[in-house]
Amino acid sequence: METTVTLQAPFEYDLWVIILGIVLIALSLLLFVRIIISIRKREKKSRIIPEYKPATPMEVYGARDRAISRIQRIMDDFREKRITKREGYQKLSLVIRSFVHDTTGINVEVRTLEEIKTLGMPGLNALIEEYYMPEFAEDGKADNTGLWASCNKTIGVIQAWR
Image 1: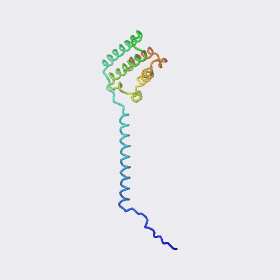
Image 2 (image 1 turned 90 degrees about the vertical axis):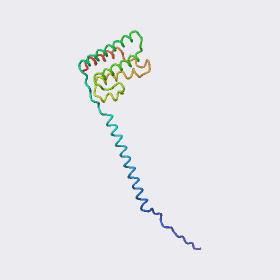
Image 3 (image 1 turned 30 degrees about the horizontal axis):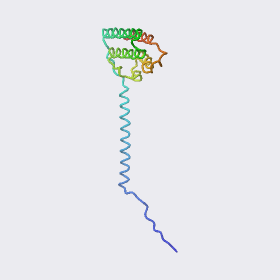
Image 4 (image 1 turned 180 degrees about the vertical axis):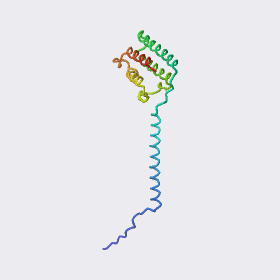
């Protein structure tokens, strides 16, 4: 018994379907490239170092006096056990951050350590890095640092600030 099989013509797309597919792929690639470019622009914009607004010598002198007196109050409060070491470091961080803001106009009070490092202020970088562990660690885990020494370093940085 002989059977005959008739084959169908192979499946073919119309030309307009192929063109539509190519256009959709091209649009998707274009959109992807635009998203990548906008992300990179945002990253670059966030890395821009703000301009300094230098304070006048009298403003620096006043800010210096205020900051040093606040540090001395922190040392007194710590000695009298009115604050813990952690609270002392938190207050010390606020003092140096507000001092820098007062003397430069750069709002470092809301910046992380990594953001502060991009500003190019080595004295501030070192202090904030020194404060991080005792400031954010659980109580008792930061015993290897001394609040007195940190206060004295901070006073030294403030006195040398220009």
